[in-house]
Image (cartoon, rainbow, N blue to C red; front, top):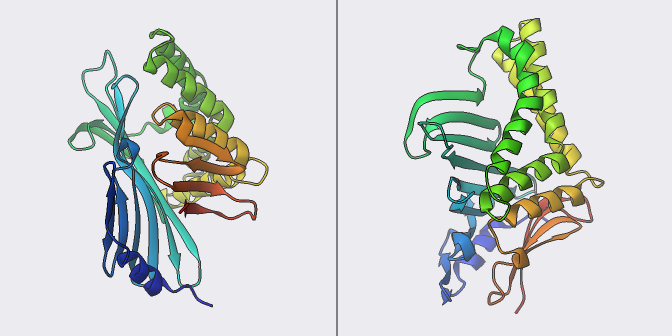
Length: 295
C-alpha cells in the first residue's frame, strides 16, 4: 500500500516528552518530533507536511582545526512521499580564519533540487566584500576566461595540494590543525576528489571554448557531479566512501560513536541513549537514513 504520512506524524506527535542527561525528545502534535541535546548539539527530526515526510539530521556549529574554522548549519535530510519516492537535500557552511589573511572566508555548499556553491569574505552571519557564486551559475561576470581555461587545472591539481601540505607542516603533529589537514589529504585521495576537480575544470574549459550559456554549463556540471556521486555510492565503492567519511568525522566526534556497516555510516550518539543512526547504501542497494531504538 501507500505510505501513510498522516499516521506516522500522528504517532510521532503522540509520543511522551522525555528528557535524560540533557537530551530531550519533543513531540509536536500534528507535526512530528524533534530529538535535541545529542553530543555536539546534533539534532534529529521527523516532520510531515503536504503529503511529504522529512527525516533530518544536523548540527548548528562544530569548531574544528584548533578553532580556526567551524562547520555551521550542517544538515542532511531525506524526504519521502506517499509512494515511497525519496528526495535528498543537505548543506553546510565552512567558516575559516586563515593566518596571514586580513579577512575571514566562508564557503556555502548545498543541494536541494540543485547544487549551490558560494565562496565569500566574512562569516556566514556577516558576509562582506568579495563573493563569488559558482552554482547556480549566474554568468561569467568578471571571471577571466583565458585564465580559467589555461590555469585552473594547474591550481586545483598542483597548487592546492601543496598549500594543504604546507599548512599541515606549519603545525606540530599533536595539534588538531595538523591532524585536520592530514585527514583532508587522506579523505581527498580516498574519495577521488582530484579526479572530480579535473572533470569540473574540463567542463568549464570546454564551455568557454564552445561558447556555452550558463544554463548549458550548469547542466554539464550537474551531470559530472551526479556521475561522481553515483560512483562513490556504488555497491563497489560505498564501503570505502563510508570509511573515508567516518575517518574525517572522527576529528570532531568521539571515535567510539562512529563505525561503518558495509556501505553505511553508523552513529551511536551516547551509550546512555538506545539510539542508532545509519546513513549510506544498504545491502539492498538503497541509499537512505535509518534510525533504530533498542528498548
